Length: 290
Image: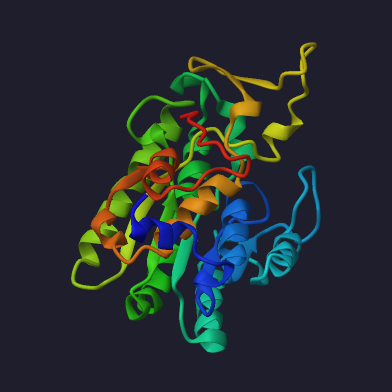
C-alpha cells in the first residue's frame, strides 16, 4: 500500500474535523451508513430526511444524528422533504449561516419502499406514476440540492457524491429504474463539466446489494440463510451483502483524497474504490455483490 493510501485510509478519526457535510435521505439505509462514517471521521453532518418519528422501518434523522455524536462527529438532524425546493434552499442557507462552509454533499435520498413494488416488472406493468416518483426523488431532488449547494462547494473545493447504481449501464429492476440511474450519471458528468474551472469534484457512487433495514425484513430460511431474489437478476445471500457503512467508507476515502478530482464526472463502484484505497467493510471483507 502506498504512503498516500496509508495516509488516506488509516487517518485518525479526526481526518474530517472542521469539515461540514450534508447527507440527504440519511434516516436509514445507505444514507445513514454514509453519515455515520463521515461522523466517525470527525465531520459535522447535516442529516436530512422526512422521518422524524419511527415508522414501519426503524430510524429517524434524530437517531442518525445521535449516533454520529457517539462516534465523535457532530450530527445535526434536519427534517426535510426534498420535493420542497424552498425547504432545500433553506437547508443550505442554514449551513452557510451556522458554519460558513460545506465540504461534502451526498445526494442519496430515494424512496426504496415505493420502488420495491415494481421490481422485475415489464414496463407495461409499471404505471406512469412510478416514473414520476422515481425521477422526482431519485434525480430531480439531487439536482436541486446540487444547485443550492454549489456556491458553498465551489468555495471549499468540495465534493458531491450522487448515490447511483450499476443499473445505469445494464438492466436492473425495471425500465424506469435504469433510465433514472442513467440520467443521474449523466447529471454527474454534466455537473462536472460546468464545474471544470473550479476545484469541486462530482462523482457517482455505485454500491452493490446493501443489507439495509428494508432487506433486513427478509426472514431466514430453514438453513438460516437470508436470501433475496431479484426477478430476472438472481438470488443473493444477504450475509454476503455490503453493510451501509461500506459505501460510507468510500465517501470518506474520496473526501480525504487530495487527488480526487481525477475522478470527477465519472461513476465508481464501492468495491473498486475499496480495492484502490485499501478500506474494507466492517467485517474486514470487500464485498462484491453488484
